[in-house]
Length: 388
Ligand SMILES: Cc1cc2nc3c(=O)[nH]c(=O)nc-3n(C[C@H](O)[C@H](O)[C@H](O)COP(=O)(O)OP(=O)(O)OC[C@H]3O[C@@H](n4cnc5c(N)ncnc54)[C@H](O)[C@@H]3O)c2cc1C
Image 1 (cartoon, rainbow, N blue to C red):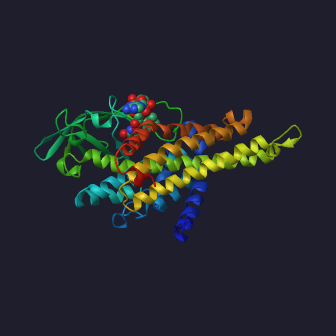
Image 2: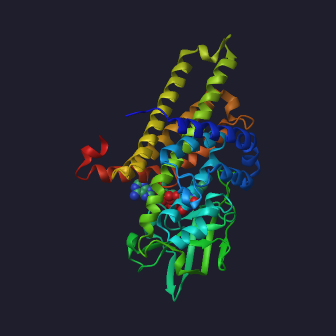
Image 3: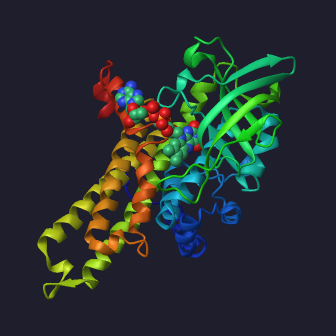
């Protein structure tokens, strides 16, 4: 067992950090303030390989492991958690086509997604189906060589500004549950698609979030990803890695917030001493660092499990997502507290990190649903091996 990053991983980290510091960090506050979706920067990220990190090289991706990916994403998120998170959603959608699409579909879409030329949205949630995603109602009906899709999707990241929708719809009967769902690739400007307003959110301002309505949207049957009825399983496989990615975005944000708090403790004086001299604050910083490192190890363990095809990978990804997004939100909150009143002021980035990290406890499965996944597995047989 070796906990050190490899030479390659150290090089990825350095390259990602240099990119993030140059192309993202100086602009993140403006993107947040002005609600700018930085498409050009994502194209630049594509040139670095970051839009297809765990997509195979043969399809234009970097062909990296989830562990490698996590090392890169953490650096991007330290600069801007919101933009990094969209990049990961795009990576997840791209991976789903690359992993489960037909050869023709892969070659038609994946290279242009992996290069960042096209951007993708992942469309699972509906107005009436969030946590209970298997209950989705958007319907895809076969009509000759096409499917005709009707329904609506809620809270879709990037919607209205992306090129491709990777969308889950029901091809089975109304009561077919998770077995009656299929996944489709849909050009985002297809006839019959309309977009709602950009939701006014607490954070994640550098990416739009919109509702999507689909009215008699016709897609070729060849745009189905995988077999009919496999769509829910494909969506969940995407989310295993997606949850690690979101957890990693929390790691990056928390690391940046913690380092700022540490520096501020040296700079700020009260009662004739720097904040760093107060043991109560030293202990706070120590607990923040400890929880951050624990969270990072859980994310890397989940990544290792996914990379090695471990049957308990889903369990570990859910545990890592729950723990890391909660722990990192708390780290960012304590970092804000250590800044006193200045932490609450927009001029400092602490409140942005906090707003951005908050949603990581909600999306790609809420942290209650992560507990549900873990608890279900724990109540099965074979639990000892699963968590040892
Ligand atoms: C900014 C943002 C971006 C998003 N981007 C995307 C995207 O790109 N693509 C996409 O498909 N979706 C996206 N989502 C949707 C997100 O995944 C859902 O909001 C999330 O899964 C929760 O669904 P819900 O909002 O319907 O809440 P609900 O499912 O209604 O849950 C409400 C509350 O009840 C709890 N709850 C529900 N069921 C249970 C249960 N059985 N046991 C215990 N507690 C339970 C939940 O944890 C939550 O606290 C995004 C959401 C946001 C806010």
